[in-house]
Image 1 (cartoon, helix red, strand yellow):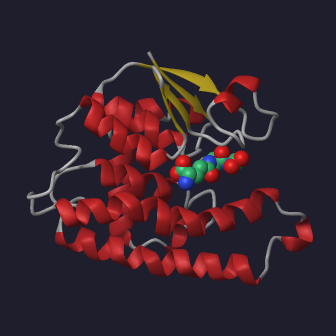
Image 2 (tube, helix red, strand yellow):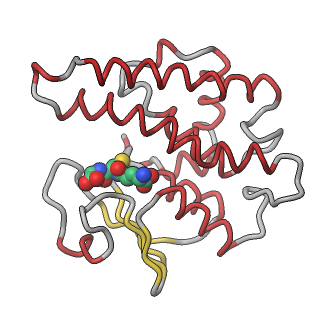
Image 3 (cartoon, rainbow, N blue to C red):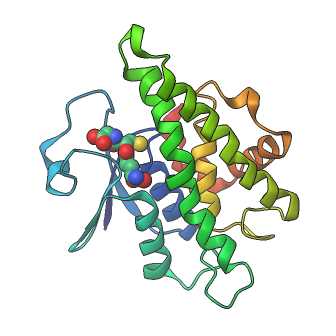
Amino acid sequence: MIQVFHAPRARSTRVLWMLEELKVPYEVFPIDFFAPRPAEIFEISPTGSVPAFRDGNVTMIESMAIVEYLGERFGPTPLVPKYGDPNFPAYAQFLHYGEASLAASLSVVLGAKFRAPEGEKDNWSTRAARETFIKRLGLVVSALKRSNYVAGQAFTAADISVGYTLTLTGLAGIEQELDPILIDYLARLKARPAFIKATADQG
Ligand SMILES: N[C@@H](CCC(=O)N[C@@H](CS)C(=O)NCC(=O)O)C(=O)O
């Protein structure tokens, strides 16, 4: 069975969400983000980062690469549009944008908020990362003005990428800056049965 080392609210949420959307069974190894990692995770993830994922002989640690892998492994699925589908370019872009452009800047804000010493929480880098994140949301707003989801009228794995990152805006204290179109989008994503199951450990 597929195994996922997962911490609540960590990027491993994307992996559980995709597995739930695909209705593929899996086993979770719970990780306490602020506690020392169990030795087993280091067989997969050299720094103990999550997600850490195993499917037989396959091990992976990059959340959106795992989501792509699952789409191919258990597809074809409408969650993964293919080249030739008019939504494919937007799909490919947002599949990566949610991590590489959005989560990368939001992580700086969250890392400082929860881990930096008191006097180092507010600095040029954290302010720049916050501003960059907010500006980058503009591309998501433009996409959602055209269609219900970031890559067309149907939910896809690109929404798992972007949507997961948006779920962190409350933790980062940025939720009040979200355009109403993003608030509505996030509410629709959070109402999905697969999201609810994948985040049941978040209390
Ligand atoms: N780009 C990676 C980032 C993975 C990552 O940074 N995971 C965080 C939790 S959200 C983590 O485990 N950080 C602790 C560490 O890197 O040791 C992904 O999307 O999976």
